[in-house]
Amino acid sequence: MKNVSHATAEQLIQAGFAKGVELECPVSVAVIDAARDLVAFGRQDGAVQISIDLAIKKAYTAKSFDLPTDVVGSIAGPGSPIYGIEGTDPRLVLFGGGIPLKERSGDVVGAIGVSGGPVEVDEEVAAAVVQCFEGMQRGE
Image (cartoon, rainbow, N blue to C red; front, top):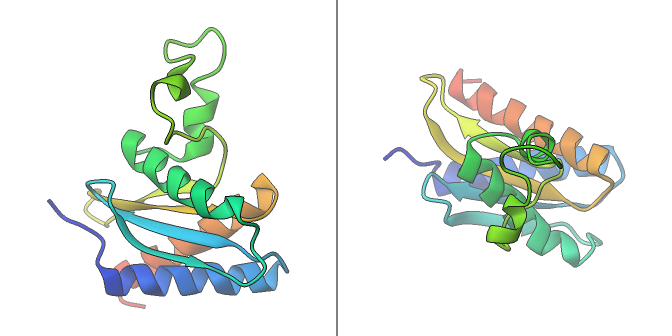
Protein backbone atom coordinates (compact mmCIF):
# COMPACT_ATOMS: atom_id res chain seq x y z
CA MET A 1 0.00 0.00 0.00
CA LYS A 2 1.36 3.40 -0.96
CA ASN A 3 1.39 6.05 1.74
CA VAL A 4 2.15 9.72 2.14
CA SER A 5 5.56 10.07 3.81
CA HIS A 6 6.27 11.95 7.01
CA ALA A 7 8.56 14.36 5.14
CA THR A 8 5.80 15.12 2.65
CA ALA A 9 3.27 15.50 5.46
CA GLU A 10 5.46 18.07 7.19
CA GLN A 11 5.71 20.10 3.97
CA LEU A 12 1.94 19.94 3.55
CA ILE A 13 1.40 21.21 7.08
CA GLN A 14 3.70 24.15 6.37
CA ALA A 15 1.72 24.92 3.17
CA GLY A 16 -1.46 24.93 5.23
CA PHE A 17 0.10 27.21 7.82
CA ALA A 18 1.23 29.63 5.11
CA LYS A 19 -2.30 29.83 3.72
CA GLY A 20 -3.68 30.26 7.24
CA VAL A 21 -1.34 33.22 7.77
CA GLU A 22 -2.35 34.69 4.39
CA LEU A 23 -6.03 34.41 5.37
CA GLU A 24 -5.31 35.66 8.91
CA CYS A 25 -6.85 32.53 10.39
CA PRO A 26 -4.75 30.12 12.47
CA VAL A 27 -5.49 26.51 11.60
CA SER A 28 -4.77 22.93 12.54
CA VAL A 29 -3.67 20.57 9.76
CA ALA A 30 -3.73 16.77 9.99
CA VAL A 31 -2.18 14.38 7.47
CA ILE A 32 -3.10 10.70 7.53
CA ASP A 33 -1.88 7.77 5.47
CA ALA A 34 -3.79 5.27 3.32
CA ALA A 35 -4.60 3.19 6.41
CA ARG A 36 -6.16 6.29 8.06
CA ASP A 37 -3.36 6.55 10.63
CA LEU A 38 -2.01 9.95 11.62
CA VAL A 39 1.32 10.73 9.94
CA ALA A 40 1.78 14.31 11.11
CA PHE A 41 -0.21 17.08 12.76
CA GLY A 42 0.33 20.76 13.38
CA ARG A 43 -1.60 23.50 15.15
CA GLN A 44 -0.76 27.13 14.61
CA ASP A 45 -0.60 29.40 17.62
CA GLY A 46 -4.07 30.76 18.22
CA ALA A 47 -5.99 27.98 16.45
CA VAL A 48 -9.08 27.10 18.44
CA GLN A 49 -8.75 23.95 20.51
CA ILE A 50 -11.61 22.09 18.82
CA SER A 51 -9.70 22.42 15.54
CA ILE A 52 -7.32 19.69 16.75
CA ASP A 53 -10.00 17.00 16.85
CA LEU A 54 -11.86 18.28 13.80
CA ALA A 55 -8.79 18.38 11.54
CA ILE A 56 -7.98 14.76 12.35
CA LYS A 57 -11.61 13.68 11.86
CA LYS A 58 -11.84 15.51 8.53
CA ALA A 59 -8.75 13.71 7.26
CA TYR A 60 -10.14 10.38 8.51
CA THR A 61 -13.47 10.98 6.77
CA ALA A 62 -11.87 12.04 3.49
CA LYS A 63 -9.77 8.87 3.38
CA SER A 64 -12.62 6.62 4.55
CA PHE A 65 -14.68 7.61 1.52
CA ASP A 66 -11.84 8.74 -0.79
CA LEU A 67 -13.90 11.89 -1.25
CA PRO A 68 -13.72 15.45 0.06
CA THR A 69 -15.71 15.81 3.27
CA ASP A 70 -18.08 18.38 1.78
CA VAL A 71 -18.99 15.84 -0.93
CA VAL A 72 -19.58 13.16 1.70
CA GLY A 73 -21.82 15.61 3.54
CA SER A 74 -23.78 16.36 0.38
CA ILE A 75 -24.51 12.67 -0.24
CA ALA A 76 -25.34 11.92 3.40
CA GLY A 77 -28.31 14.25 3.74
CA PRO A 78 -31.90 13.34 4.55
CA GLY A 79 -33.35 10.93 2.02
CA SER A 80 -29.98 9.69 0.81
CA PRO A 81 -28.95 6.03 1.02
CA ILE A 82 -26.25 6.87 3.58
CA TYR A 83 -28.31 9.32 5.66
CA GLY A 84 -27.21 9.04 9.29
CA ILE A 85 -23.81 7.51 8.47
CA GLU A 86 -22.11 9.90 10.88
CA GLY A 87 -23.93 8.10 13.70
CA THR A 88 -22.05 4.88 12.89
CA ASP A 89 -18.59 6.28 13.62
CA PRO A 90 -17.83 9.25 15.87
CA ARG A 91 -14.75 10.01 13.73
CA LEU A 92 -16.82 11.07 10.70
CA VAL A 93 -17.26 14.76 9.85
CA LEU A 94 -19.65 15.82 7.09
CA PHE A 95 -18.55 19.38 6.32
CA GLY A 96 -15.70 20.83 4.31
CA GLY A 97 -12.01 20.82 5.12
CA GLY A 98 -10.94 17.24 4.40
CA ILE A 99 -9.56 16.11 1.05
CA PRO A 100 -7.96 12.83 -0.10
CA LEU A 101 -4.37 12.96 -1.38
CA LYS A 102 -4.11 11.32 -4.79
CA GLU A 103 -0.88 10.56 -6.58
CA ARG A 104 -0.66 11.25 -10.30
CA SER A 105 -1.36 7.55 -10.85
CA GLY A 106 -4.72 8.03 -9.13
CA ASP A 107 -3.73 6.07 -6.03
CA VAL A 108 -5.05 7.62 -2.81
CA VAL A 109 -2.06 7.71 -0.45
CA GLY A 110 -3.69 9.55 2.44
CA ALA A 111 -5.78 12.60 3.23
CA ILE A 112 -5.55 15.98 4.85
CA GLY A 113 -7.88 17.70 7.24
CA VAL A 114 -7.95 21.39 8.06
CA SER A 115 -9.86 23.15 10.82
CA GLY A 116 -9.68 26.48 12.58
CA GLY A 117 -11.90 28.90 10.73
CA PRO A 118 -15.27 29.04 9.07
CA VAL A 119 -15.80 26.08 6.75
CA GLU A 120 -15.04 28.24 3.70
CA VAL A 121 -11.63 29.13 5.13
CA ASP A 122 -10.91 25.51 6.05
CA GLU A 123 -11.77 24.50 2.48
CA GLU A 124 -9.53 27.22 1.01
CA VAL A 125 -6.60 26.16 3.19
CA ALA A 126 -7.21 22.48 2.36
CA ALA A 127 -7.26 23.32 -1.36
CA ALA A 128 -3.90 25.09 -0.98
CA VAL A 129 -2.47 22.02 0.76
CA VAL A 130 -3.68 19.74 -2.04
CA GLN A 131 -2.25 22.15 -4.61
CA CYS A 132 1.10 21.89 -2.80
CA PHE A 133 0.86 18.08 -2.87
CA GLU A 134 0.08 18.09 -6.57
CA GLY A 135 3.06 20.40 -7.20
CA MET A 136 5.30 18.00 -5.28
CA GLN A 137 4.02 15.18 -7.52
CA ARG A 138 5.07 17.20 -10.57
CA GLY A 139 8.50 17.84 -9.03
CA GLU A 140 7.93 21.53 -8.36
